[in-house]
Length: 382
Image 1 (spheres, rainbow, N blue to C red):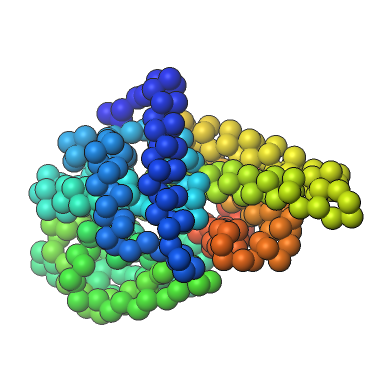
Image 2: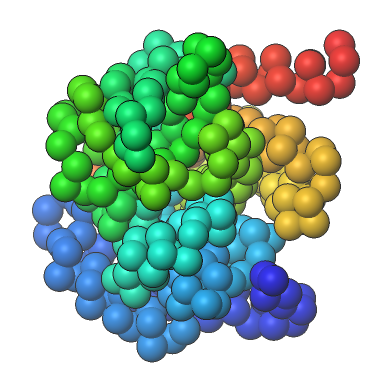
């Protein structure tokens, strides 16, 4: 049972996160002398300990795992605040609250929870997701990575791409098609250990995000590492996908707020042709549209989060719509912010240029626009 927090309590928690980010995260980022790509492990560990003392740890993990067991809606409120700094889009509060664990892990056996999940929660580590493939075009139905049963083992072959935060994970999960005797394919989830003998290749996307590609050749995994039943993998992954889309959307709201703050501050300060930029109608329109669309995106994100929490039928498609609108809104706000700053926006002392790169990744991450639009059309019988 997720922890239901009243609006007043949630407001207090939001302010606590805001103060925490200002006191520890922003201070750590601003203390760096060189161009900041990431904080050191020592700095992150130090902030993470402070977060544990403040009770800001493993926000979505179940209480019996050692987490706070907060609802998805509550976490959207928190992550909107936690993302309001340079590294915040993909590392809210520099990951000091611990990485999010997918709710599908609730389908793990008690032994799996004891061996993999609880240690990850204690250490503040996450669970990497090996889902997408290079040529499947964001369609789970098209995955080619497959497994064949051999006694009490499964033999996995194939490739997985675009895997994030692998170096911050205690273990991973993989979606494969299990081939049965009659050659039918059933999508199924298995647990991956970091020392499993698969090939790993690191890639850097647009100079800001580390990803991994994995290759599996006759990887043998015991059946006791399977999560759920054979054939349940796709439905379990779709719920994880919706939750991840909501949390990404919340983080987009956070960096959009900061980008608008930068835009307004610079527009009031910069003087051209005898007037501040904020006095020009075109600049005022940019900022006003950003504020309006940000509020619309926030309402969509909160509505979708509540639907997922309540298990409503429309939750999955609403999560996709919220993800699409919030990433597009953030992209426009950041682009306008960069336009207002001119050349100063590309300077490394401001996070605008980093967000400009990252939001391009976010628009493709967790389903791209074309797939979402098609899914909306199908859901509405168009």
